[in-house]
Image (cartoon, rainbow, N blue to C red):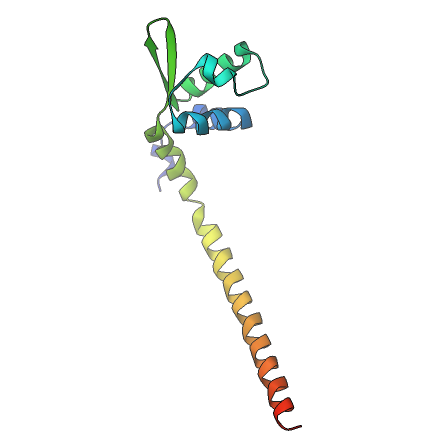
Length: 126
């Protein structure tokens, strides 16, 4: 992955940095919602929810569409692709560690099976 040609991910990461905004994204992933509908699900002011929605919009993660007097917020799942691509580069480190962990667990299981087989043979001769 060529990091120098990646898009500016700072606004998206800023948007994703807050747990409330991540919760809002999950909700908008299920269905588009107005500010009022989002606000009803949180114990924060409507103004605070609006600020969160602005950060999500600035990060390019949601789109806001005017429908009459209301503004409806929708998730832009395609906007998460550059973030996932960037994070995907780090999977190589996890893959190595997970392979090592898998090998260690398999070795332990093999040792236990060998010990149980030896114990079982001992009972057969009694």
